[in-house]
Image (cartoon, rainbow, N blue to C red):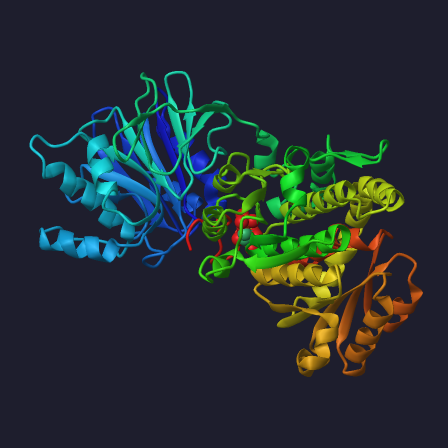
Length: 616
Ligand code: F6R
């Protein structure tokens, strides 16, 4: 939600800022803007409604010179998407310019207070309140406070979440940045410093970064050591980390969209996710978190999995896996509801937090709550050193590389893969799985990437199928057992990128209401692979067919029974039942992708969405 970039050094800042914004555009694309201080010390702000390309067009005839700058791409919270509400925001004197990711919860009170002091506001944003507050604090001291101190004192009055960067016309050789509950990374180059909401705008210039912690404020001066203080003005020694990120993940390569690239990346991603953990030869799964915390994990009275969106769907599959294999009870909770539900959590609970970005505000808050109540927290994240990854006691990264497409694809299969390995590793330790079954599952897990490769060969056919259904206004997705969450995920993928209304149901629930929706206009996608519930799903298919529904079925290769009954079939290679989600989700991702493309939608940046939901 909103992307922040900053640069200070010897190079021209503008090209670095624009490139960085493009990398961060997945975080929001309602408006974009930048602030630059040029060689004469002039502070200029340029901003416009729309995407980063619109900002570039807007800036094409402006003076964008200068070696100091900050830039922002916005996902609107307070105030509609417009150039007035776009960041950066000036202070009243136009000496300060500020960008912000987050929400200032007490902005209305602060605004009233500042209005009483004579400040006037141009925008409807909480961000403008923050820059005016900093200016007010600064000027209410004689002599005026240095920017760092003014930011520090102002932030003590602020309730909410923020990652900010501030420029001051009077001190052009510095940027002040701060964070609380929204991510911020400082890149350390040779005589130059970078800022980013994540490391993607920084990676090609330096691999040395500092992840700011909550309540920390950084002073970026190109020729000095990075200074970091907390809100109480205690100096903190910044921990410099080396980035583990592939530049290739940040580029589309030969694919027209990141989403398609990321769907096709899945075999390689899952191989990377299993590398060093699954040994097919030795029939073993080693997750370091399980090795290090075996007793604590096995002693769990229950597991609580918290997550949002796609990650929540992965959590449902995780529940099924852990309960089946480990015989430990698992609750799955929407993090957003959980945090306000006064949940019963005890110190013998283990909480698993699943988050691709590792920055989802609700999931992070659920983790903090779980920690307060004494639960042991296990993180399953993609982004290394993200806030959730750092807030947990232990965890397993999914290692699928940067996911740029707003619709999550490879992260979902990566999450399911880690949950599968976790359930199997725990079951093996607990001896709730036989050696024979464990061995079979290890072998079959190793084959999953190749099976996904087979499915990807049906891409063109799925593209043709998508054309037939582009007209549809509604879709129903059905699945049972392990495939019920796959149905939910298939429906979510379709609605978020094609804007077609879609619902996922457990197939047997149809009779309890949703079947009333079925007519010849209603496409129904059924995951109908050969498994324990096959016959039951077959009956559900008959029920839909009897009411004229048009069925697309995902079937096990060679299934002739279902193919005779339904309108269209997508064959899936045979696998063990509990591993079906890893392969069945892939054709549903492709179907959603192609339908959205046929409808002319922007699949990588669907409307109203942002990838990293760092606000409630
Ligand atoms: C859907 C999607 C979202 C995210 C959700 C949680 O394609 O991407 O539903 O899954 O916002 O995000 P993370 O996993 O980053 O916590």
